[in-house]
Amino acid sequence: MHGRIPTTTTILIIDDETSAIDDVAHALRLTDYACQWATSETEAVECVRRATPDLVVSDIDLAGSSGLELCQQLRQYPGMADVPVIFISGAQIPDVVRQARMAGGVYFLRKPFDPEVLIELVDKALWMPHVLRRQLQPCL
Image (cartoon, rainbow, N blue to C red):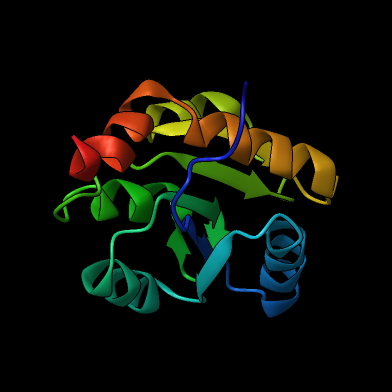
C-alpha cells in the first residue's frame, strides 16, 4: 500500500512574493506537510542552517538573484545534497526546464499552478529512493 512517509515532512518554500508562498503553503498544509518559507537568499540559507528540509520548492526568479543558483548553493550545506527541489516560475525563460534540471531540480511547475498537481509532484519527489533512505536511516 502506498502511503505517506511516517514522519513529519518539512518543506522549505523559497519565493520573493509572499502571495506565492501563501499559495504553495496553503496547498501543502491541506496534506499535513509542515512548511517553512524564505523570501530571500539570506533567509533560505538561515532556514537550511537551522534544520534540513525534506524538500525545497523554489521560485526561479528571485528579486536580485537566481533560484537556480541559490538551490545549487544550498546543496553545499550538510544534509542538503540529496534534498529534492521542485522549481516553479511564472517567468517566460527560454529552455527553463533544462536549466531547472541542470540545477538539480526534479520537477518544474509553471505559475499559476494547480494545487493538486503541486501535491502530486511533492508526493512523488518525497518517494524517490534517496529521500526514503534518508528518512528511514534513523530507524535502521
